[in-house]
Structure formats: C-alpha cells, structure tokens
Length: 249
Ligand code: PGA
Image 1 (tube, helix red, strand yellow):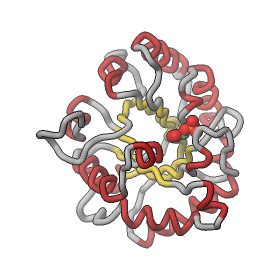
Image 2 (image 1 turned 45 degrees about the vertical axis):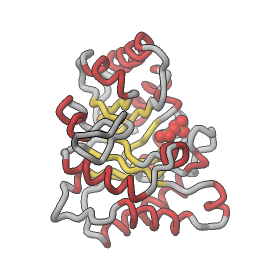
Image 3 (image 1 turned 60 degrees about the horizontal axis):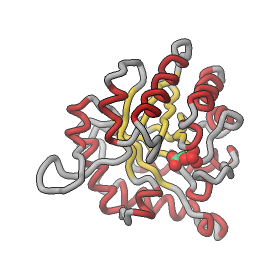
C-alpha cells in the first residue's frame, strides 16, 4: 500500500491565486514521485478550483457535517463532498475540538456519516501537553477512540476507509515534533486497540510539526503509514521535499 501524505492547509492561503499556485507547484513537482498517495485538503471554497486543475493528487475536506441535507446553515454534507469528487475528509482535528467545541459525540456522528458516504475519513486524536506530562497519553487516546469510534464496526462500515492520525496537540504548529520512538510506542498501542475491536486495515498517520528533516523517521522508525502535514504543506518546496524524502525511504 502506498504511503499516505495529507496536506492540511487549514485556513490558508488567503487568495485563490495563491491557492492555485501552491496546488500547481505541488502538481508539477510530484510527477516523478512514486509510492506516495498525495492528498491536499484546502479550505472548502478552493476545492472546486483546485479540483479543476486536474492531477493525480487526491483532494480532501477539513471537516463535514453529519446530516445528508437540510436546514443546517453553513454546513457541508459528506454526500456533497463525495458527489463533488472529494475522496478524503479530516475529522476531529484538535483545532476544531478547541475553537469550535467539537465533542467526541459530534465527531462520532460525523465519522459515521462520512464513512456511510464512502469518504475516506481521517480521524485525529492526540493528547495535550499537560496530559503527556502526567503520563496520561494512552488513557486519553483510549478514551477518545472509545467515544469517537462508538458503534463503528466491521459489519456496518467499510473499515478500510477509516484512517487514524495521531497528532499530539503540543506538537502541532509548535516546531516540537514528537520523538519517533514515542510515536512508535503509540502506534503499537493504537494498533492493539484496533485489533481488539476487529477493525482491520486502518492506517495510522502521524501529524505534528512534520518537516523535511523528520518526515522519513516517522515512517522508518515509528512505522507510521503516512503523515498529516500542516505548516510545511503551505510552501510547495517544503512539501515537495517531504514527498521526495518519504518516497525514497
Ligand atoms: P503542523 O500541523 O504540521 O503545522 O504541526 C499539523 C496538523 O495540524 O495537522
């Protein structure tokens, strides 16, 4: 299976011209890159524009709602994304949990709706700095998984479309990435929980201050199956360096 590298542009860039430039630079730069599935998740309003540029790059959204249609002002449904040609959606990102008060119950509903619509759903989980300092990381992750994956079973959903992203909150945008050895320990822990729940084929990504220096270590040393890249995906050269490095690793 190809390594999965997901660019989370968050609320950037500020103009369509910049968005197109960034997308096209990545598109032109990845022509000789093999073994990597590249997904770009721009803000909603740029989705149609980058999609129309046509390329191997898959596109994803940074969120979706849990209902299919109706009176939900401002929301976008998984079905709309799917019908439009979006293949991926990021759910439960810690910034949404923090700034928009997204709860595990909401994330669980979104996840079910996204999987039902046949989107590949990237569920983000991770501990805060204080929780790690109190050695509560595994407890937090276990609790998040229990709630976020409630009712998600093999018999009801296409589990191979579920992807986990371990994103320690303290590592996001801080320049302080998590040590690959620590990520490896978490990956093993998460894999064990998934196995207990008979959820097979779920890939586990790492996210949090990934750059071209450390990217390959998460794949080689931590055995993550891909990366979720924020800041370093906003400069085409930086992102391309990451892609080249992981494709050679
Ligand atoms: P970062 O963000 O790479 O800027 O740390 C990662 C993320 O939030 O997904």
